[in-house]
Image 1 (cartoon, one colour):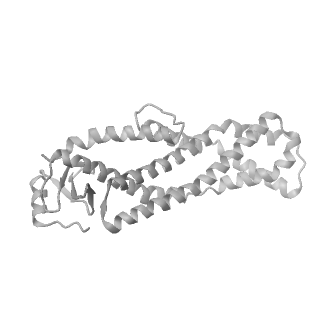
Image 2 (tube, helix red, strand yellow):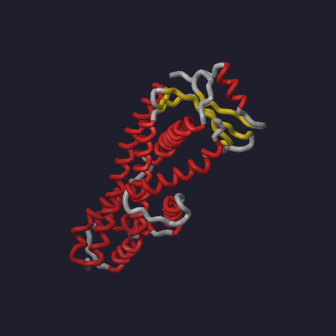
Length: 284
């Protein structure tokens, strides 16, 4: 479906435009209950945020306020999710995880030579480090798979050029999943900082006889692990975790599952819609 700014559509857009506002007619429509709708967003010239919304039919008829709100519930979140996929996730899925692959592979290579020197605590620390490395590496494959699934849905939407409630629900579910993967792997990386510190201390103190190649691998591993707890990296990680946990309510909320994450974020998104969208709807 092609969005056509007919004379009637332009007249209504202009009618509801306020002083110093720039109207933006979305280049795609919405389809709800077999009805098509256009969405207009008004922006003040000096502001990036939207200052108002208008929903109308392709023939230029401005629908009632009650009819416009379900349309905005579909179009605005879907638009936000599509932008997150094509910009943020497209980058996140390609971020390098080689350092975790290298830690894992070096540690697995050295492990047979460490067994007789390890106590139960170090053995547990090493197991946790291996699990975290494996989780981070596998999570990148998950992000790529979800990205591909999301892009199939986005391309289908682009081809027909209208969005449906099903499109919005499916894409948001995928977005919640990717966000939780990113959050959870940050959280588990932060949780093993003490363990990593003990492993580095273990290598410093243990008198382990290794051949030349494995001695070289041990130095590589210790170098990688020493960087793990540098403030430069831990501060960035802590800030990222905090941004996930405080965005919804301002109070830190540690998420225990993807379902918990979805529930809290859906509540926050609804609060945003009630406060930042509905008051600015211009449909009568």
